[in-house]
Length: 277
Image (cartoon, rainbow, N blue to C red):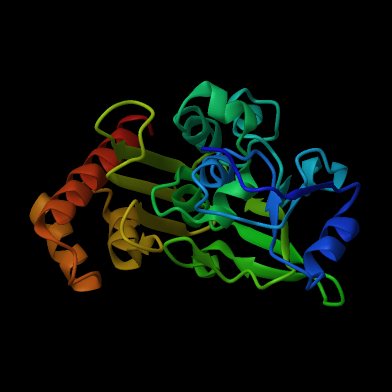
């Protein structure tokens, strides 16, 4: 199948893209890499009247940094992070995560911001940015720019706090110290497919920060603060029974298969992180 007819607008800057989005004369969507929206258009699951192409918008491609964080433009591509063409505030975690997203052809086009806004529960950046405590910068016409913690941004499967006319412009990732320990593990049926379970763990003793995040569930990522704190304090790899009990406490509707997959992934994530400490 092919998409229904639509108007394509190429934005020169964020203001023009936001202006087009704010028009109330039809359904308008943002497109950057198009690796998620493109197939939806071809299957006619999405039928916008207008697309705003922001893939080359300079402000959305810009990357800046301070002593505290790196601000990634929302149109930063997966492959650019994978190849080390961007600063790395994560002590290697972001390039590692990027290298495992689908296939190289998709990583060449897909963008960090596009992945977060699409909000697929099984998307790698959704879990990774939650674990890294990222903050999202959101812009719209006639409103002040607002900041939203990644942990609050995704409200459910394919649902975010983005309001009509708003654009995700950049992603702020804190800089972690060289003492940081991190792990990232996902269970897939074969390489390149969406994961059945994802677990990320980031612990930085300098920041007194530790967070465990589970992705590829039915909705927003699940954050296990108690287990993360205990793990940072003891350094002991939790048993499967302990993990399953914690999962049941935080997500009682989780079925036994998913519970087991998450438990296995979490244990392997922690083992891998501590082995590379």
